Amino acid sequence: MVRQSAAPVGVQTSIGDLGTPLTGVSFVVVDLETTGTSASKSQITEIGAVRVREGRVVDEFTTLVNPGVLIPAAITLLTGITQSMVATAPPITEALPGLLDFLAAEPDTVLVAHNAPFDTGFLKAACEREGTQWPDYPVVDTLRLARAVLVRPEVHNHRLGTLATFFGTPTTPNHRALDDARATVDVLNGLLARLAPMGVTSLEELRAVSKPPTRAQRAKRHLAEDLPERPGVYVFTDAQGQSLYVGKSNNLRRRVATYFTAAESRRRIREMAGLVAGVTPIVCTTDLEASVRELRIIAERKPPFNRRSRHPERAAWVKLTTDAYPRLSVVRVIKDDGAPYLGPYNSPRAAEEAKEALLHALPLRQCTHTFSPGKPVAPCVLAQLGRCGAPCDGTESLTDYTGHADAARAAMTGDPAVVVDALTGRIREFAADLRYEEAAALRDRLTAFLRGARRAQRLTAIAVVPHLVASRPGATGWETIVVRHGRLAASAVLEPGTEPAAFLSSLTATAERVPAGFGPVPNATAGETELVLDWLVSPGTRLVEIDGEWTCPLRSAEAHTEMTHWAHGRASAQ
Image (tube, rainbow, N blue to C red; front, side, top):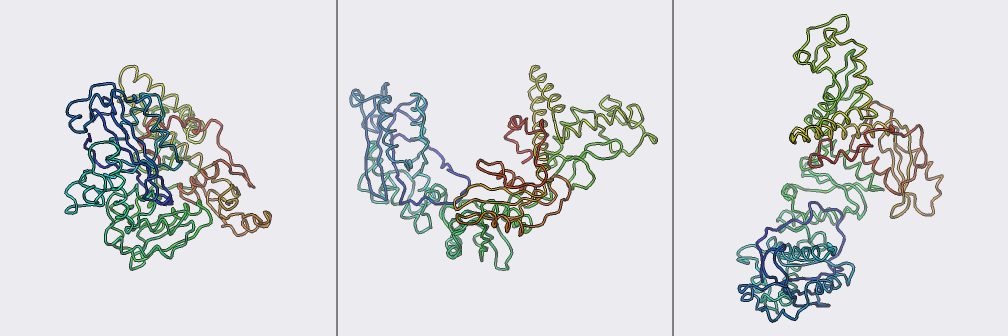
């Protein structure tokens, strides 16, 4: 069998609620023979596929394929497939639809291969050449699983032949597609048998396996046994009761159990398993409530093994000050001074980029001097360079400068066109002159500005609403929430048979009382309010009642959302 060396590739970076039992999965084990190792240059000469359910073979597919090119002598020596054998075989144009039909015979197909990137790479390339859409099934790689589960001295390598000998497969791999696929079936069954005692019983867990669970992980599996199978938040604690890690799930017991199986591959979480002494479940009525509670607990307790959302108080904002000659400043605290704010930003650097975007479009002062029309001061270097109108010494009148400040305020709180037009125009000029690095720098500043303006405008719009009730259909009824000044005040499910008016009256009467406050996030973190906003604008959500108005500016930063994808690799404001 022709194979190329490939490092094991992770299938997913995080695990949500795991729930596809392996007993219900239809595995199709595929193996290919080819004329070489390059999917773009070589061709398929043979296809073998075996469908397996609950460990038993239920169907097979095999065909030789005429590659349309000469088979190299080394390949013939390796596989035994000669030019005469494929001369009357169907070309890939005819063979590929047969394989695709075999794969699609059952709706829950999962593709399996030994060194899966090799086989899937050839199949995807063949589909592309034939103008056919690759169905993109979930993939399980037995090579990657074997590397995670079987270590030396159990096996000296993880080749298919070695694994077949280790598991005692009845079919010996011989570099022919169907026989190798049959051998891979037995290797897969052997690996699943090894993983079952480690707690890997679902497809999602199987695809996440990267190494065996540690002894500490296995020893703590009992902590999940008594947890409810309900949505909510879970808190891992140490022997002193200190919070180590906080998460949320739609199924507390199932999710917590994954932390103590081979499906958990994150190094810091595997290290945490040795410190965990208990798990505290907090049952929630809705997924939104669980998400919000998770953020609140992380911000309050700052568990050491959580990486995100621990320090919302460290967020940076761009502020337009309220003195006689306003200037832009990067701050961490929002004050009740009526000033406009952009953000929040995760880093001061991102806030500085947004600030630079405004300064590029509007000639606001950058000095920190305190002065007034009656008490001028000497101009700074920027004024001498012509980059500032010098209001400090009276060169620029207070009226003219106030016009610039008002324009900046309007761009931050409403229509950002003055900034967008100034920067996009300059970006085009730089691009036309082949000054791409300078154009990219301006692009990043504009992106940071628009992201911060969009966030601040969305947050401010909901923060001023004193009371809002919304509902949407869920799994067990109508999920209903109460939002007050941007904060989730209550959450419940209106189940079938419940009188709606009484339900709504009780929910609003017992909801948290939330004061008005000031700024874009007066009573919650930006993360919480954005969770609420995303829920409110999701399909199917209905507004039940509202006090006040929930509006955004007609020509707000939301209208320029497509520009925030220019630098999608830079999470400037998220």
